[in-house]
Length: 222
Image (cartoon, rainbow, N blue to C red; front, side, top):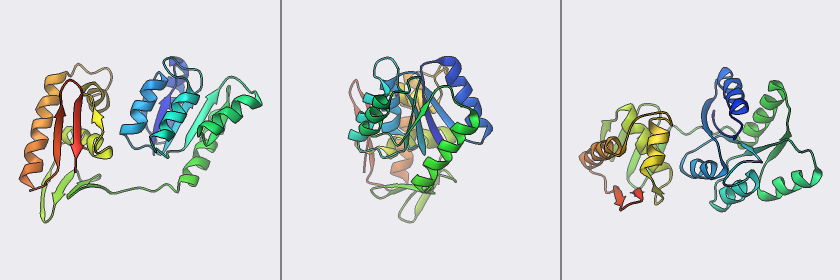
């Protein structure tokens, strides 16, 4: 399972990450509501674990914006407050579940299992946009009867772009998600891999394109 953790308390975020990784989950971690919105709308997650009190955008508003973007990923809200009004606000915003801090690892895992069952734990083996198919297990790019293998980095970048066709993805977002937030990768690295991908898309004869949006980033068009 792939889980997004949105929590501005660094120690708690690290604790959540350890609990979930120990249980075999794949984790992305962000520290504010705006970043949570950005990640949730460009990547596919099984569950989003969202703190309520965060900078830039609180968990309630981030949840509303995620739902306005037609993202249906189950959202588990975390809060230090146990007021009924807060729970109602969170659920009305579009959250699926609610947990009050402090909580035990066992309680957290029980909530996540319940949410994933609600989601049906649907796993897609490939991603399709236009005439192009991206294999999520074999990193193979296919159009018609023609295919080519991608490197892991090429696959990571193309998966981000194809997961949100028509959406402009910034270079910073690509760096953070494909290389990691602590990486020293820069714009030149992104540009190089975009060039590699364009050549491979052309090689398989696809009509799909990765468009450059000046001063904004890239957009995948099927």
